[in-house]
Amino acid sequence: MTTETESAYTPAQLEALAADAARELEEASAQEIMRWAAETFGRRLAVTSSMEDAVVAHLASTALPGIDVIFLDTGYHFVETIGTRDAVAATMPVNVITLTPRQSVAEQDAEYGPRLHDRDPDLCCKLRKVEPLNRGLAGYDAWATGLRRDESPTRANTPVVAYDPKRQKVKIAPIARWTQEDVDAYVAANGILLNPLLFDGYASIGCSPESCTRRVLEGEDARSGRWAGAGKTECGIHL
Image (tube, rainbow, N blue to C red; front, top):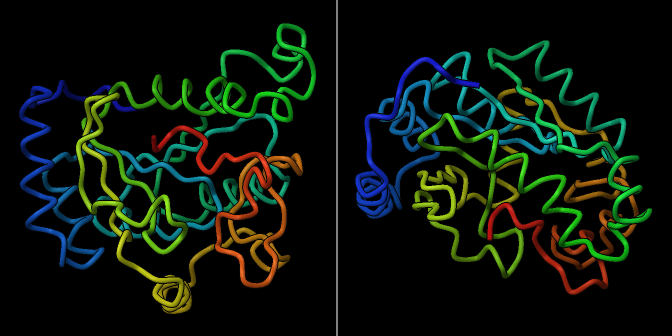
């Protein structure tokens, strides 16, 4: 994680900067948005990746080679997801940083009981995703994510740049305006690494328990396989 420099911005300055960029970059290409982020924040910019694919990590590496790519190892991932993380670290000009929760799965089970993800998925996500990310982003001014507007109704209004008030950082979604066809074209043109589960019926890949991630049925949106039937659509990172 970055320790090279102190922030050049106050929270108020970051908020104003994000508001200006949201207006100015709404129609910009993903590459232009990432270049702006790299030029503005330098090494105080990170990328988060679920290792569903390496699209945003690749985009970011073209603007800022060696950029930190943050991966949250919840202890519940599919082996394919861990394999994708390792492949990204080995083959791309990025610095993959793996964050872990304060408790192992066994320690969490001992305190909260087994299969917390079935009984209280919001708490499980908070402990194993949200809190580790909050700690991991402490040394950055901005973070980029792969959110897209077409993924689900809850993401339809995702701005390309926004202020993240909970973390007091600028949040960048360079591919927010992309469609799945845009993603597929970028993957094909650049030989982007993909999680093998995308070829096995999974359209959005999270933790491995079926209550967290299942295959998507025909006609469902990409996020419908996450926490199916639980009335939950987000892990909490983007709320």
